[in-house]
Image (cartoon, rainbow, N blue to C red; front, top):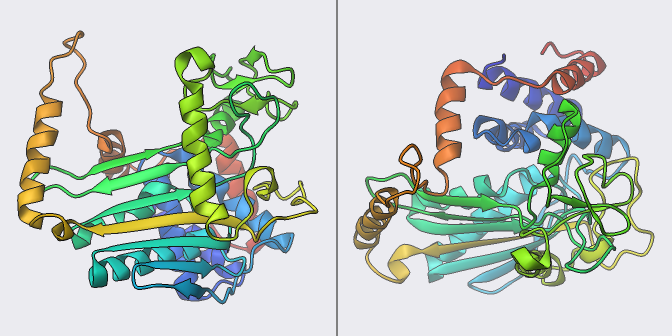
Length: 355
């Protein structure tokens, strides 16, 4: 068991060893550890060694020159110069917030970036400004569109954060696949089978083998199959890909570079790096913020109070499980799976950092 602060400091030291400036290292560690704190173990310190390997392979620039390459009063395009998405993403979200402050809404598309952690962290940055935040990113092609056996999309998450008054904010943060790839990685570490509907094998048949993707199969869009609405998950993933990459000039579809360093990026890229998309909308651009938040409270209370078929269950509001995890892990610490613990120990030995 490790405290949040122990893991945050360790991660910050690793980013410094990669050559990141101190402010970048601190920010990257904060964004990364927000995943572990919120119970999204697939996107936290378990990915730290992956960033290191990408940096060693020359695919992450530790000292990027992050630039706005095109903008209007309400929109912008940022070139991340190959930097950590954990740093590029927050800077893009801040630009969206600033534009929203000036003209009511801000929309920023990003190219030439890398994996940016959990989408929810970025969307939540808008909450403190009485704004609605949105964040999405495309990712390595591991997902087959409905009816296909080719991998053309990533898990392509979408996050939306909406402020409330006395109630906690509404925070939806989800992959557009039945399950995120990181959850599959957790099953692989545990040696457990995947649920039906997560994966298909290389022939397009359903499989529960957690190594199914490595064996030529694919993750499935949200819904799992056509009868359960996978075409809708496919559409959502496609929207993320287009907003994040076709709009910004990043790589899209099968050209998105893989997160794993042992696989080379496609030799014929159609853009630069990975793409993200961020939005911020000032609530008072629509109605008075306090009035809106009062009604959001009523909305949340209404849904929480809904009758359930099973009296031991209750209706949750998006963000509830993550908030509970954050409360518990802030107090009790963060337990790492043995393979992740071993991975971090090896990183510590490599850089001379005591975990």
